[in-house]
Image (tube, rainbow, N blue to C red; front, side):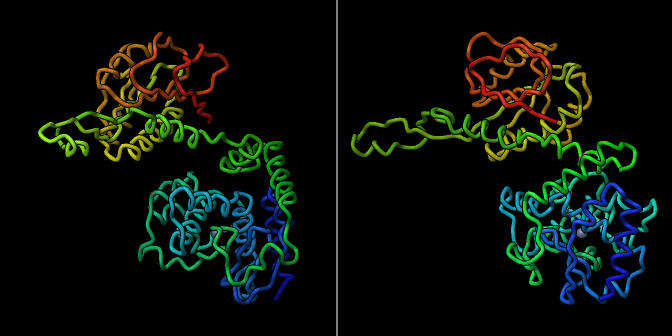
Length: 391
Ligand SMILES: [Zn+2]
């Protein structure tokens, strides 16, 4: 293999993207005729096809170096595994989608400025989607169709999607980085980006911020709070005469009401006072309605109410999602609770920054509060489960 050419390309990549230099030089090269192009594994080995090195220009190779190391810095294999667990979606087809979605996350801002964009690079536009988003966003929005099959450059290895490849040396093979070494590389790169603002694109700046302040798993917390509210004793139980109870046979001639569970209904109260930003609200609201729908199994059982219907973004979001928006009053969430409780929901979820008075008595519905972080907020009621929603 022409290692001189390959290493010259790495040096060029490091010159063009100095903030990635530590990571580029941390990769261990393994010549691998079996690999179609260049691929990485989670242990920071980079498998390179000798024929590919011969075929491509120095500039092209420099771009591929930056691309491959980006998969590892951004932990695409770990995030691919997490996505697979969360959605029960595994197998080669799903992993290929992960590779493509990860490529779309990387490719929208790593080329140009000294590195040419390869003609076959997968970009959000190839998937028919907008740029500037992350792998998980893209994964929810495209399928692998014939249009994508002509994209030849799609195998970035197990470091891109978590699926083991035949050429992988595995955790015990030579020259792999330990977990501590991988963390050190990631931390050093992030430190360089945060310390020299202006040098890296916005996508990398956001990434570096997250290395230092990993987001709280509020989605998980919110999901489990809502699940436990919905499965609590008494929720969804109804006495009905519609169907004979099993005990009926032992008491001939007497019709007893039977206990029947109905799917839980969820009411979301949204605090749209000016102190909550549209961005905060957007992701939290989508998350809550998605969880609510998954729990109820029927979209008509999730209602969203706004405490200030004049804020357009909520109206739009709700409209797009097909959720009826019921007007509330002012920025006092107590009014929202009063209206919500008239619909007799099983669970109320309030999304708020906490700058509101709360009902003084426990409402007749299990309550989860999704709280946006503020320096100060009023005391939370003891009858609610509180989940802090970060970033
Ligand atoms: Zn890739």
